Length: 199
Image 1 (cartoon, rainbow, N blue to C red):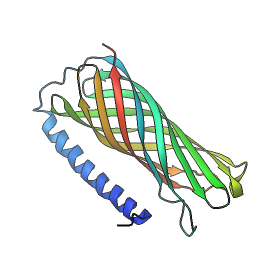
Image 2: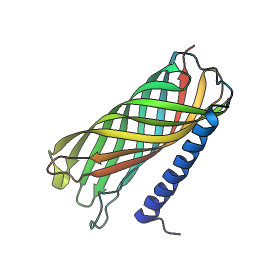
Image 3: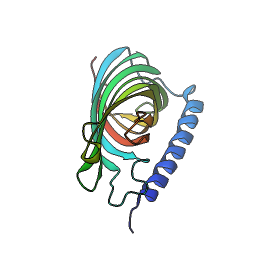
């Protein structure tokens, strides 16, 4: 089967809908769930994934709007249901024939809310401001633009031990690239992360 941009976009939409359904189901279950044992503490993590700039390649033959994404984050649990998190993520490149590209990255500050399902498993949602930067090459050579907007995401976290955990998530960066020259729209990221808590 040939995987197209439309297929990926549809897959992201389905994943988002499913994640939201799980998100709200977890919220309903949270009040009866057993404590996770999280105490106020610091944590750090590394993330890898795939970005999809769903706006970038309309009408452009040979354009590739997907790339690898990677980043790092650090946070502080203020309560077993909430943490504050700061992160940096490289969202990869959008590429087109003739050496044309757009590179994107973000800094973000998030509030993360957790809904325990079982002691090792929690669903979570995240929301907060981001500052995005883009630079171009080829026909967009020397173009640089900054974006300030809101990012949001949903995911699941599995605690392997009192210190280590893994996450899977879908995160959206809407309104990316609001400058006058570079294309603008949403960049969506499917991401896997590993984190370590200091206790």
